[in-house]
View 1 (tube, rainbow, N blue to C red):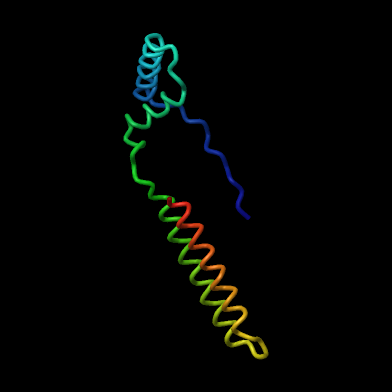
View 2 (cartoon, rainbow, N blue to C red):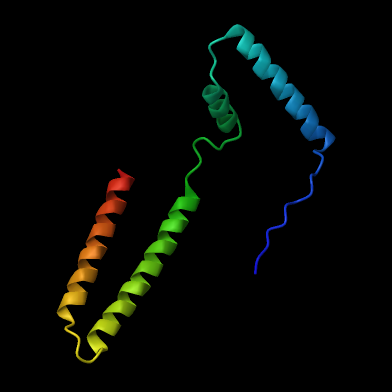
Length: 113
């Protein structure tokens, strides 16, 4: 059984604390000049400054690849079972599995845009 153990609170280093203070002051000054500045704009600016806003989404691509490989393995296993089980009509399970595969492919394509 896995029991997650939270990390003990670690105090940020003095450099991290100084950087946080500078960022807070800069944001406060910018908010004085532009009172309508939203939290979303601040978040986007922070992501842009750290190079994370336009970073390629690698984790979802890896997750999709892993899901595709797992799905293909399951599909192959089901096809082997359907064609080797005595007394079963293999055409029906294979058609159902093929339809499910097409539906998943269409959903993935629709999500990609």
